[in-house]
Length: 318
Image (cartoon, rainbow, N blue to C red; front, side, top):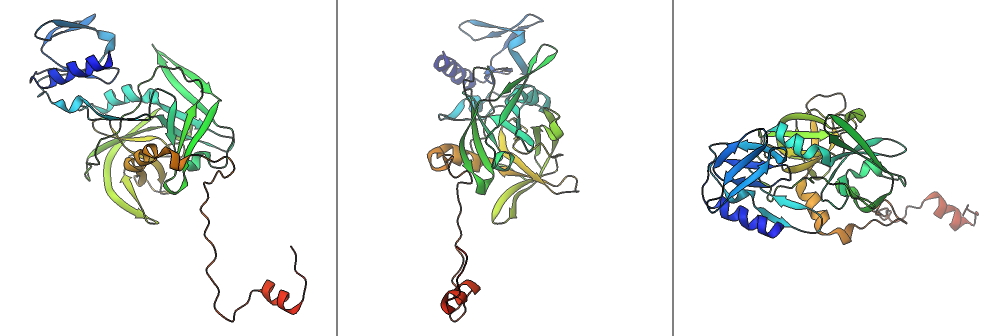
């Protein structure tokens, strides 16, 4: 079914139609609009017509040049890269907010987001560092009711402390969601609009908007994205989106006491970890995924107190 849909999208995208219909599942169809009422949207496919229930339609963009950028570019086992047509912040938030979760431990809370429908999600390493018991709270919109689903069977799959990223998995996950999509290529510019979804102070699915203030901000030899979108404690681990609803970063820190000075890990680091998951596999015996830096050699002729005591025959504590 998915193959047939992709083929259909490719044919439609190459035909130069005017209307662009975005579905709640993330797919986009370009075709002339024959009918649009409260019940359904009817599209002209040329050889047939397609009736789509209105409840499955996220948005309709009129007078748009059809492009093939809506077609899935690449998929691996853990995440999807896709280049959709533009979405407004409100449309993208409605589509992807259910994929943003609350990550809670005994010592604090943060945010995370699903990268696929199998229950795999990304968050910051510092959100769950040193913790064994992690719970994930989903927020599912059912009509006018926001239902909270708490998952307590959570597995730590991979950790990358240097990049402050961690991959978790909810065991026996069977909830239908629309996972986020990543931008295929890092094509970002200073000044472009961005928005973040997270749980600042536990306030679920909070959306904040701003611009990309800097694309290469160096801290400790690591480059970060700088944004002026409001970020607070609890946003850590949440996704940073561009104007087309693609994930371009993972929120991880802000300047204490400063407004509009916040930072995100570039999405390329997250994709690299997901592409090389075996190299970052979590080791329960070493939750820090150990970096060990031995002390530099001492200058010749200089002895530590322990060495001096040992040399003089004075016993030392084990």
